[in-house]
Length: 423
Ligand SMILES: O=C1C[C@@H](C(=O)O)NC(=O)N1
Image (tube, rainbow, N blue to C red; front, side, top):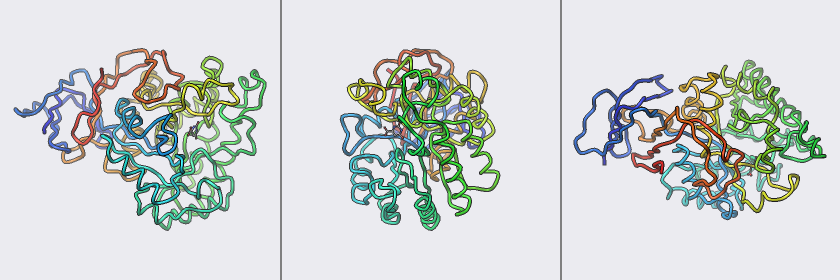
């Protein structure tokens, strides 16, 4: 089957291409990009006024299957991803059971393969997240793991992290880690600041993140292994990543849209839907995150899509699970809070959602080129709309419901097939 996308603004961050042109897809490949293309038998999409970009890549999602399919399944997660313009995602290992064994990982990836988008997964770093015994990296890589993470459960033992990094170096693989020292935290998910104190408890202070990050960045530096630092929330963390990169550490940094869009104040307005680990911080942290995005200290924007049910979230702040969904609002929050105020260009935003995440895992994705994969998103980058109350995700735990945002995904194409059309 062929598909002809006409008159779109084609943006490819990898080649820095930004022009109004046409793009022809045959089978699962892009065969031609240029002006005035014709293909008499092709299905035509009129992309006038739309941006045509590589399908987005999210290196940090929680799809709850196996084990917690009341929150999300691989199928509903894949639908949410396609609705958000994503064609490749990386699942975290905190399923039930945890992705510590090759057998469980293989079964999970077999389910994932039935979906219309590309779903990859990491294996856990330690067995069942016990924080001390490393998994069999070779067996998990053989079973299809793209890297390793104990995301959600920080590695408190520096010796274990060092061993894991040495093993990652030996197996040429990547560790991606969550930095929050539990020994410095009262209640998880809310910044230890104005809002937590107003609510009468001790929250999660920024030092729990940046102290652990400083330690781990230096261990990465010493081992020479690659280390990816997930969802940075504190201004100091950005400064430390900048310093460690300058020193020569092979580290990369990620932020989520929620951490650059809203502050801890959202907890007062949105309650448990604004609770997540690491928590929302202050405006001063957002300012440093933006500087980090601008100067390349922060390489990647990822969602940390973390579905929980309405019932699970409808409890007191201190008891509620942490996390928010993000796949269906991510591009929009980037357009609203980074591109519209001119902190980043559209090309720079897309680089952090396509080329850079593809490079992190060496995926053959995240670019538009002749002979390249036909994984494409078409979106309106200008129109404002209100985020709906329901999503393609099974969950609705988003603090952005009913908020005005900019940009709307119109079509998502994966493997040359239309996998999402805006209703
Ligand atoms: O690291 C994590 C894990 C996630 C989840 O719910 O799985 N929720 C969070 O808020 N942070």
